[in-house]
Amino acid sequence: MSNHKETKTLDEFLAENPNVDVTEYWRRCWGILTALKDKIARRFPELQQHPSTFDRDYYTSPNGEWEGSYQAWSGPGVDWLVNSWIGNRKASILDMNTTAFLDQQTDVPHLVIVFGTVPHLFCYCDYTPRRNLLTNVDYLDKYFNDEVNDWYLKLRSNPNFHWSVSHGPYMRALNNPATQSLMGELSHENISVFENYLHEKVDRWLGWLDAASPVPVGERASLQQQDHIIREMSYRRDPMNKLAVKVFGAEEVERMIELRMGQQQIAETRQY
Image 1 (cartoon, rainbow, N blue to C red):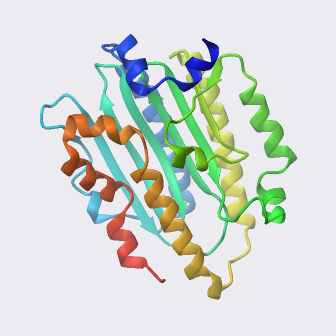
Image 2 (image 1 turned 60 degrees about the vertical axis):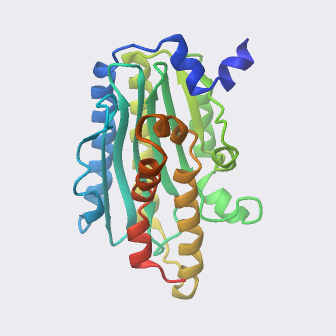
């Protein structure tokens, strides 16, 4: 039974508690994510909201049951800074995130932070590496060192949470030594644990950016190509898309995926 709770599908969780009003917890989690986004944006004062997201400050599904917001910013230092949420606050399901895909001036890891409710509390976060950790051990030791490892293990050993396994092979391929994919009871106490951890996460990441050396200009196009593939596939292969198709339809979800991954921004800045 303990193993099954780690591999339950979203549909199974929602079937158990399909109509929980999670508005109160949405407000708390969304506030945390917005504060983290603002902290990142202060580090990159030249960011501008991308025009493709101007009309997505708030939107609903055709039947009005699902709603959401999608905003993204781009500029020097950051290719795609996202602050978004989607779901049904009256019926258990929410997916909320703050994600920063950096540009190629440095090879500092990207930053991914996700809150969710099903209606159990879910949190996924990581430092997405820009180099192959299996072969570039200097990069591994720089960004996934003993300090980060001890900090990671402290949260991982918290008895309030258990691992949540993605059913998407690509999503599991994204796992790295800093990946947390945890689920627990939906409570303000548990949200506070994640809030503290996530602020520590962002503060450390901002410190890495301050100390980073520039990537040689000749290497930036190949790094950008890798960044774009990861960015596209992490949205395109998200199992959450299957739920969205039931609500919005396949054609609209395809359009949403292209918006979420910033296809227009990718086309505007591609160097390879």
